[in-house]
Length: 308
Image (cartoon, rainbow, N blue to C red; front, top):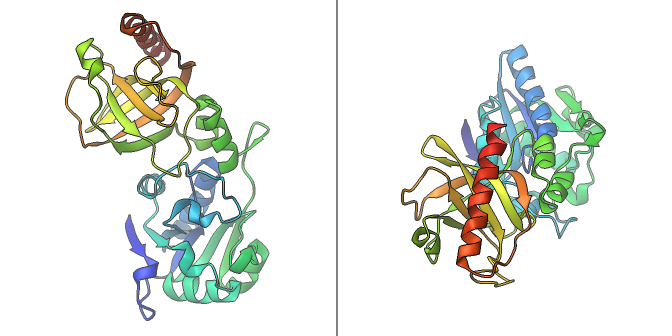
């Protein structure tokens, strides 16, 4: 998938056209987003053209009316998930660069002239233009005589799929519920940092990662997870929290993961950790020996979980 930074494109430049373009922030690229993007891809294939996604490059900056919102995915991971749906191009836009555009200017300059859109695909609750003044009906009118497809809400069971609902599930530690709405497990991709290396001294080596600033953090606790390392996937036990037995710093929440069956060095590497199930609360133990015994129990539960 080719990626274009629209903010850096010159006014006279335009992308490949004609295109079927899916519009949205697509934070998390959840099941509802996937349905919308697949609609744009299907239109493109039916009409012998290419597909694209128009989205923001700057996460929560695109959520001015939700100051407490936290991102579910980084831009890099978002693009990877979008590419997996068969999209040909992605257009990245800086929110501040377009927040003052009228709906008319948004459609004319961005969608039609820069993106070459002959079909715009949006969700039922899509808003655009200054102050969110444009909605899906305005988009439909402004795209004429070109096409506009409005995708209805997606429900899984009786639950409306939304980024807000997913953030709540992640923050509650309900990883299985979050994965159901996402269509994939919640995960982070972050560099491995140097820690105290206590785990290595007790035969349970771990990797330490910080959650990116401004991103949703799972409820403190112990999780069964999968860790991707250079094309291989390993089960793991992740501790999200303050490590009360070792540090107990309430202002320093991180992710410390024991990768089962792996003992290599990963410092500085960007590693993906996917959270599948919350096993228990984070606890303070009397000492390292008691902590070690509990970790071994967590390892057994994790292996049993993935075997099941």
